[in-house]
Length: 240
Image (cartoon, rainbow, N blue to C red; front, side, top):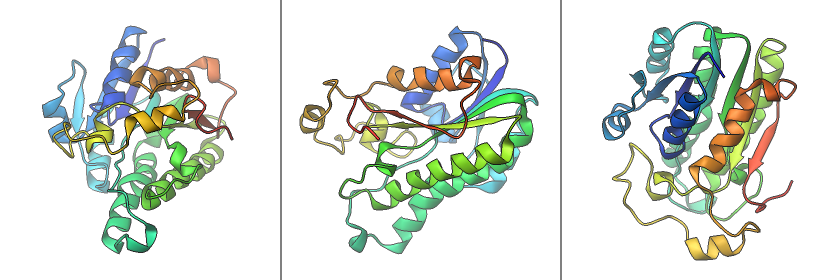
């Protein structure tokens, strides 16, 4: 592989693995992430500090990226504490939707002009956006929205740019312990790991490498006739 790609959220658990794997196969990688995430997990690639919930930050970050990107990956997002919808305050609802869905909309607006003809845009959804589970209300709604947003982007940017979405199940990263840049990353997992794994046909929780492979496939020419799709990566937990 060759060419430049940018990764929003590249300092997170999946992001760091993706940076490593992308560099190994020849991509020039640029990372955008929160300043505290960059400080906690410094990377040996160019980094730009930005908050994905800020349109001004995203516009500035986009201006610092090279033109003609071969791909862009959006890994940003976070989850609130588990609550019933009826018990979720409007402030939490708005915060989670802004931090996941609205930020995804804004980042596409900010960076699409930096993408080359033939480029690939990869969004990150979640199985929770398609397979309802108790307590994940605003996050699930936001991730379902990202799947719909991906389809709209795929139509709007075709034929020059492809847009697809990976929808992982739970991945064993700091995300399950509060999130990179949003916690000390050492909190207790938000899920009962043994009970969760017991329901996975492949018998284990996902690791970052399980997600980076599908992302790199979507970035590559091997997926050149795929756009507007959601790729579920969940060990068989959800089979749409």
